[in-house]
Length: 244
Image (tube, rainbow, N blue to C red):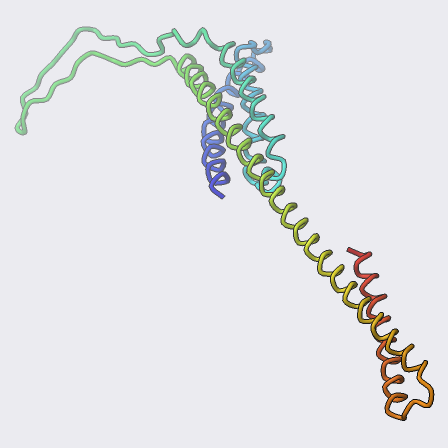
């Protein structure tokens, strides 16, 4: 349960950082396509990885039961995405040293006195290079997803190990119950066999008595019928033991 909550949290972080990344990089892919040019590898690599990573994160988030059942496989795929994002970030590494903002000004500065106080304006302006800023943001999101997918891979590996322990405990419990049931069945068979032998001996003794009174003959008939019941129970118990 706790592992599922942690996995949900990290999957949510992956999705909300991958969607802006693929959105910004798709802008560059579209611009190069309009210009009838090939998209550079430093953009295309991270774009493809971001699209695949976002789809994978959404699918595994909503199919939680399948994710838990195949935790070791999902963990391996997450680890593969870690390597893919490292490759995408490495291709885009040149943008890390770029400066995307700068200030410009004409040096003018004016102050006006008004009824409510003093106000002033300066000639300084902030300029941001949109292309540089988008690439740098994509680069930062790529580094973040390297960490996110690595953490989710570890969580899935932990979930797989916990599930294996639960399966082993269940098998041991079932084996103990089955062994206990087999011992009870064997004891019942022994008791039935001994009882049948006693009744058979008593019946033979009564048969050997000459001029037996009426009471002995009635007892003999009752023992004979009771022996048939015990033989039936004996056969049913053997069948039940064979099924187990």
